[in-house]
Length: 179
Image 1 (cartoon, rainbow, N blue to C red):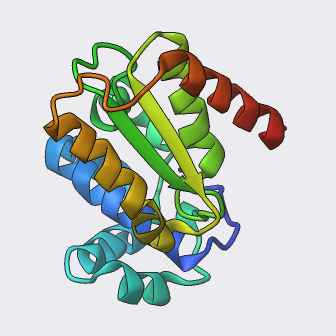
Image 2 (spheres, helix red, strand yellow):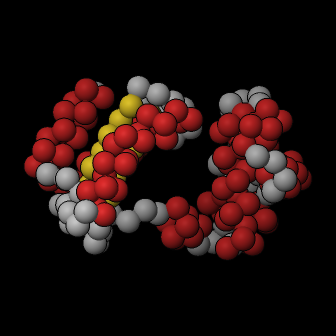
């Protein structure tokens, strides 16, 4: 996210940038110092519009126009981003199911697969499932697996049906396929 990024981005990506920056501004108002008038205007739109209309409004825009200076010029930005966007890598006391659409253009499939692999390597109780759908289709595609997962927990299974070795093997195979 810097001003020299002049590539046109898909509208949904621009919308996510605006939502993300709005959230960051809530915890770190100093980010405003590097926002351009266009950046402030997009954030104002993000406060009013749902994803579809915002994505349509921002189609073809470029992220660089949101800034007057590189985001890393904000003091403490890396720690802020880590705290704000970071996800836990250890310490799960309950099983975790991650479901992802393999054709997701909003959240890259490989990002979630690598996160699941990291959890499995650390011995965290993770179940990763992928589906031949995009971002919007994942919830419907994952419903049956999700219901089984929750049902196992409600029936008292501490593992929710997760076999750590089977899951690690499955995730390893998915990583090989993703190469």
